[in-house]
Image (cartoon, rainbow, N blue to C red; front, side, top):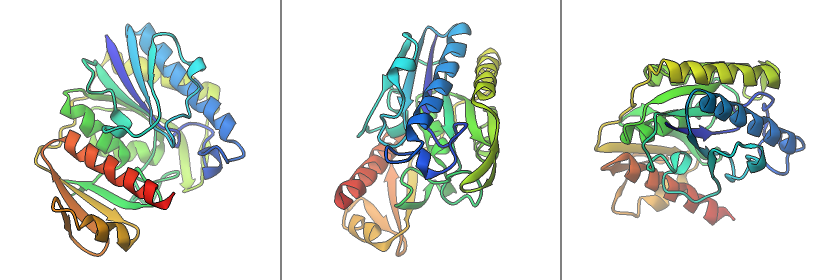
Length: 274
């Protein structure tokens, strides 16, 4: 039995401001440990529940935040970028009993939640699939669903779990902190969060209520940028339609095509500002 885990940092206990998210932050190294220990706890619980192999995607920041030496031997780790399937790279190498989204957060257009954004915080104001606003969790679940893999569990703050629960049928939510605002929250201790993650993983595997979250193709991907220029430049491509000053549309035949296009746009934006 194989399990897939997509891991992000914003929804991890302890993490609450951008000082925790990048190497120049004063508590980043501590946050890496909180992040790594949370993922290790999830993997250990899954192994105890019968999973013999677990593939983990480090999907935060530069893709190099998880401390590999803190992960068990039965874990395979996906690191760094670029990746055509982004936060779900490796889901194509199934079969998997399910996918779990650990440490996730709300989307950019959600007014609530800790460190809310979608994929590229400084570039994207909103991402929509077939007209519906999608947080990173929705995009990840849709990528898993395209391969017939159900999303069994998600963890993060209370607003993130509410948002994910409204999108994905049967997902097991694990709330580890409660948002007061974009950069403030009430949270439990790391040790208790690990215990809750362990319990949630075992419950989700014992009673897998989640179903594959499928976005039917053709898939209209709308990206609303914070600034005008990315929309203007991308509209030069024949495959892109500009809907307004800040919004473009790309129509993909599959989630793989959609993911590859988002990865291209994200990478292009990063490269042009370096």
